[in-house]
Length: 462
Image (cartoon, rainbow, N blue to C red; front, side):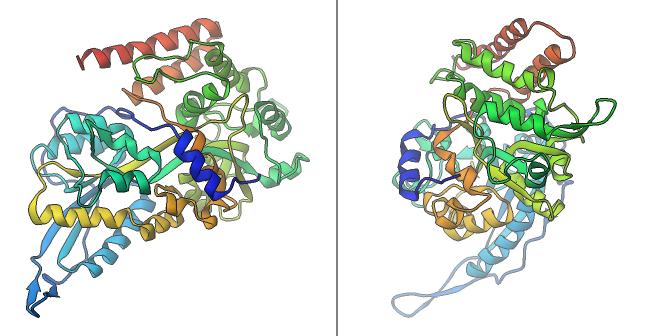
């Protein structure tokens, strides 16, 4: 599929990319927990010289005072390995700074933050999901980014508009290292087996269903051997629906002030929901829990098509190095649209003096062009800086290009409770699929439940 030019893409991004401002994707546990030393694995920092000498104008040696800072992120193998390597590189360039790297399992992360950061026992720099930023700010976990290292002018100039998600009350509190969008993955060998052109993935809703039918294979008992398209509501399906399909059908997710759900404000919401439900019910080309997860079904060659982010590219290459697959923009309908999200880094409240200076230097290093390029290669997430992402080697990359091409059409839902909103969606699909309830009734109930979450959240902000 033809990619638009770098200059055109950059212009489109500046005009069309929806500035992301979202609330917690995962409820932050505020209840107390043990303040004992973390049980998760902690990367041991490399040992560096305690001081470095710089020459001053009068020729005198100016010794920098040794300082140690701590960096937290959740336990994602590719990221942990990369950050360990980056710390060694950073310390070699800044021998007076030692960086301690600590990581926790995802489901423990916010609990550790809520307990240790207020007590002054947490990190100096923290990696956090973009949807958590408002909650972290209101809870007093973060301080504004230092203007001497991250001025508003530079942030707006250097980064894609997603950086605005980190701006609250006129101040920037976190900066992204990489971003994600959803795209279509397809198995080229299964395409050939189904007599489909492996160089022509489906471009619209109609083609997607047609291809999925041809890719589907079942045994004599009607059980799936190969899914045409994966269908797991609690995985990427709910993101695909709210941030892509609704917009593609001509609708909107929420009002601009994020106070009201608009899924039922036009026929688009129900049309998109019906499209999702028709995959297992009417077309019978996908089912839930097939090979446990969507990506596992795809990696093992038991799914012709799946919807996922660029962050799974590394896992596919590692776990299924011989899999012949391609990526493409999400099939569209009336409009083009995809889902976007990202992880950011911020400096915790109370960090000051030499530690703040060192934390600022490390954060500048993590957002540098060189590090973002390594992030793409090792993790698979897209660069957050325009000068990096718009390079031909990424924009025209046969796998990454599909994700970058969609940045101008990316949307991100305003989560007040990602778990509850996702569970509501999954429950709705179960009611239609397993209980055969009326889809209009179920859809109306879904919107009401999610709207109540919004109402409850905003009522507490008054």
